[in-house]
Image (tube, helix red, strand yellow):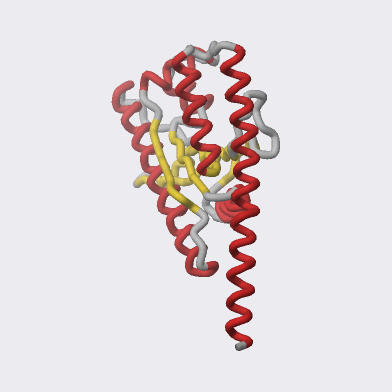
Amino acid sequence: MASIPKNNQIDQWRSIMFLYDSALKAINTKIEIINNEFVQINKYNPIEHVKSRLKTPESIVKKLKRSGYDVTIDSMIEKLSDIAGIRIICSFRSDIYQIVDMIERQKDITVLYIKDYIKNPKPNGYRSYHMVVTIPIYLTSGPVETKVEIQIRTVAMDFWASLEHKIYYKFEGDAPDNLQQELKDCADMVDMLDAKMFSLNERILSYSKNNIAEQQED
């Protein structure tokens, strides 16, 4: 990220958070356009809904300390990739990779790295597709590349992740072993549910196509 004029710590903080907030708005707009175009072409909406958030100062400080980094604005910019975050919720797993492809084809979005926790779930069962990207925010002084984390998951994955997050904080990251195992079992059931719902949807689409073809023949 390009350097920001340092008048004082408060002004610098406001300038940085303005960039992250602007990046969220820019990515949200792109996702809305991508989704609308997809609906226009394919008559199908791959996105259920989109959530976005900026980390709070308390959360930023806590993560820097937990990771062993200096609690400074420069360290925050360099070390953290999820200050600005967007979560895209889809109906089916196949939708996720279509959306990933559409995002990657945006010329002004640079993908820094990805973490595919769907093909390679975390040991606790967590599944989601993570992308860390940059998008230019055009200021009067010129463009500033700003990082945004994009998480893409199904409705079922999001439900599980929300519950796991609540339990994690309830037990401060040290949940009883039996509870962790039950969560892992639930994650496996969620994966089976995703696969079953996708298969069911494919059958419904197949029936619809066959009915249309039969009506056209008549």
